[in-house]
Length: 448
Image 1 (cartoon, rainbow, N blue to C red):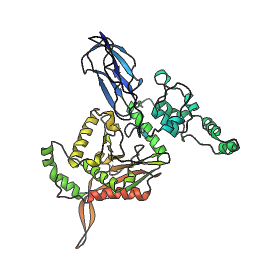
Image 2: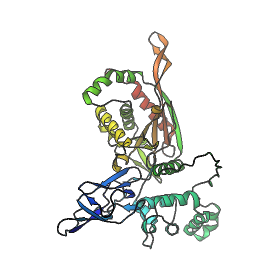
Image 3: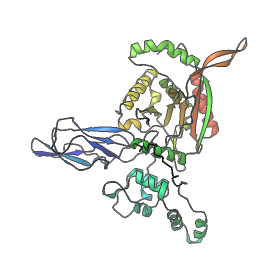
């Protein structure tokens, strides 16, 4: 008999760890090839891990709710045959590349992890810190000494992202920051540094809420907690500003009404407005590439790829943001197929971790809920997010060669929230206006 080491598989770029949600097989159970052994969760996506071999599960090395690094051995499976060397290729823990997602949907955020960041939190202890934890610590000016003092809830006392965020938002002592500043200062400047120290993020103590006998207390689910953390972090990170425009999309609506039946018959796909919006956004990004950036300290990182995230509602009430990679390289048919595929698999919780990462710009369709406009929160580390409202028939003034007339038109609002640290009002306002122009100037005779 041979013993097979089951490793936590690599689940996509920038995914370094996952949480075990549920073991579907227990020690002693017989396993067939490709049987699902367990369910795992990354910051955004729940996934299943199939068995690469047939045999008997003899030992689980991690329990439910524990966090595991990619490439770690999570179980042993007894198989028929002679003892052989490990047949499953070991993946080294994924190094966080240019972007690391902290958020989970609009619920998770991306922070840059560079070599200098790792050095800032490097210590002499053997305690392990994930690239994401190191990045957050650097962003919040938490020294290695202070990091060592934080209790961790992960395996072997490992400090998790949630532990660090909780410490920052609720219990980081003010004197820790003062001492940190004083230690870094020259002796002659100690007094002035103490008078104006760097401060931790401004937080307020939780407000007590009275609960009556008829009230129901509902615990947030895992994704809800992640979304909550991500939204608060985004508002703390970026200076949010929102610009609005109203667009006459009558030609676009009439065109879609004209082609949708033949398109569905030919492509076996329904064409919605979302791929049309995404096409307009990609064109506008090419016109204004400084919208397609992220921020790392005082550095602006201009993205080469145009990866459009689209917020999708889940049956649970949460949201997730699957990403269409290189959206500018797809035609309208390709965008339609990508949008429909990602939306269906998002609702069925079948997305792969890599399909929710590395977005450079996000689109959210608040019109699908009947809303005419919204002020969305930026999906970090992006610097802009566009909300499109419901399309409504309204009277509008048209300029004709015979004078102004009032006509019934299909109108909609577009709202762009952007990071005013790097996107000024001129760029933000001009960009959203350009998106509206592409939609307004839609060719009603366009072939698809």
